[in-house]
Image 1 (cartoon, one colour):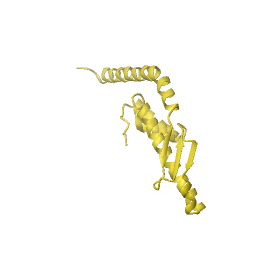
Image 2 (spheres, rainbow, N blue to C red):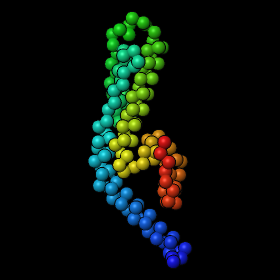
Image 3 (cartoon, rainbow, N blue to C red):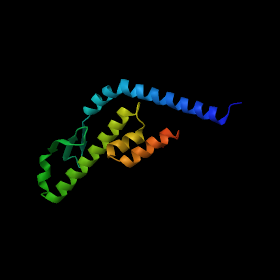
Image 4 (cartoon, rainbow, N blue to C red):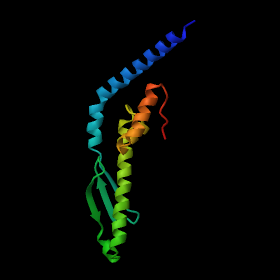
Length: 138
């Protein structure tokens, strides 16, 4: 029968081995995945189809297409809102695509926190991992 210290040491060794494997996998795949993620562009159309926006992997607007039919209803505020909403939808789809790209090496919830710049959540997740707790994926 193993003592508590031997069990703890075995558990810590197993966790260290898992961390090493994850690090090596990230090291091997990370640059390739990063290069793939940097090429992501997402195009989204508004519900009425009159506005199309394309965002890059950082969520920056790289293209805006306006159908000439927008001039039939000259309402600048509504048009601005449609452009903004469509851009937000495109950025959300882009973020999800980047999460999917990195999912083989970074848990989705952790990647979302990184993309959000949510340092508090990232640190809490790392602490959970170090304590051997699973990260809940939403």
